[in-house]
Length: 105
Image 1 (cartoon, rainbow, N blue to C red):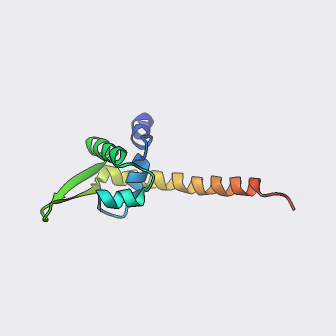
Image 2 (cartoon, rainbow, N blue to C red):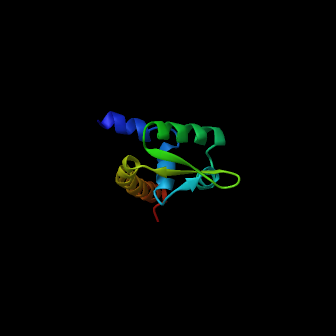
Image 3 (cartoon, helix red, strand yellow):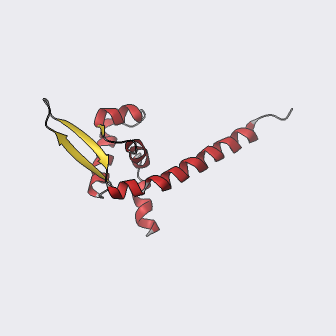
């Protein structure tokens, strides 16, 4: 079921949303701050998509005015080790690229 998993994390900004929620529930504007390049429209679409897939839950808090928080489901939590591995490889790839781009002395 690699295809199913990849379809979840391959969406634009979806891995970033999941990664930001690994530390706990976040409100929409907190996610916008955590992921600066993402537009409100795209973030909203990604949150809805991840919610429909069962990766995140949306909770309306009974505050005045009402606030909404997003958090990972158990299924979403299961994606964290895979994303962590991808991040680690990304760091190694970046280090290798930086080493290759340095001029020889």
